[in-house]
Length: 107
Image (tube, rainbow, N blue to C red; front, top):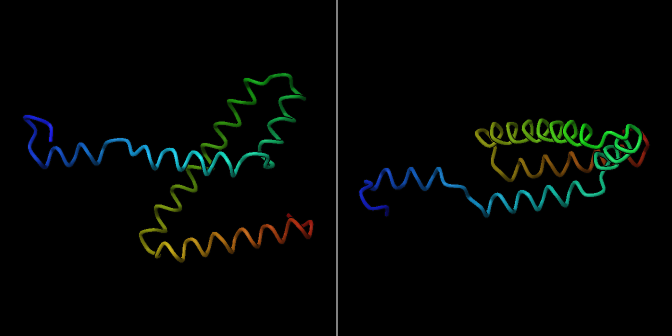
């Protein structure tokens, strides 16, 4: 407990503190999932074509941030109405459907 701070204030400070475990596990999972995917290859191609790597980096970063924000928002909203197990199953089904469509050349 921080000296001179009431217990409820101390709890509020803990809730607002950065959770580094969540930060690094999220970073690691997203970093590994995105390594070598279509987005990275598209950014590499755009950078080679335009010879403007900083503009490509900025625009790709903003695009990834926007897509991630949509995912975070969807997850936050869904978690209010559905159990985590159903959300995980829905994500797994989406991966299977997208993978199947890619194999069939339809995605």
